[in-house]
Image (cartoon, rainbow, N blue to C red; front, side, top):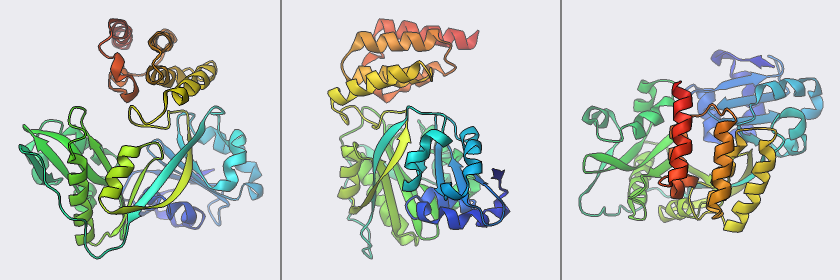
Length: 352
């Protein structure tokens, strides 16, 4: 496989065209506005194209015509990837990916209905303030400013982010507590991401930020708005639909992560099934214990969750203690003395 320079990205566009029609991130990487890497099996008229953007990997092409490159793909695609493939690759995953324990993640893509105006604005609760994500916000340096600076990290430069990204955040008591912004843009297309700090959810803040962002995207000539989420994320889907977006299609990703982002997205029995699967997988890929801890926490089995966490840390896991403390699936454990002791051990091991 050949790693392309950006000037050679057009060679991969034909192969990635169908996936790009679903994922704005692919088009944005090929445009050079957000970071990514592109590989092809041959520089001219490639049969396979692989694109990486953060932990997301996208594979397209003709596996039957490029069987000599399948082993190379297995070297390139990390076990921790969040993996999107064209449908005809789904029965080849064992040949091209070292993670044989990844499971399908059903996902939903929503989009703007195409109306000539944005959705109606909604009011914020008293004490909250809506502000655009721009240089003035950065100069203000509110609390939780890393909410914005983390978004900037995925772009090719801070200048490109400030020039092309569109978004709003909600401030309360000098801190960012909710936001919505374009994760990627390409031509008239953009994909939105949204988030709200714990303790400020279910107040309608994300809907206000998303409504303002959608209206601004339309005003600035990017009306082809998309919103991707886990099919299990009922809250995200409700926000998107409440802002006037409609379901476009459903597709599949593959990953070892839990197919959810919020407590309550998955039924406890489903979490138990995931816990069993992730435990089995951890005998081959040790960091699966991280996700097994989350699965058993959500299933309501505290002892088994802590047992997996202990084995993760004792097994030489190289992750950060902060990842454990911030993991959404284990928040009911963060004040547990046993959880705190295991996390403290991981912190000490990393600092040693």
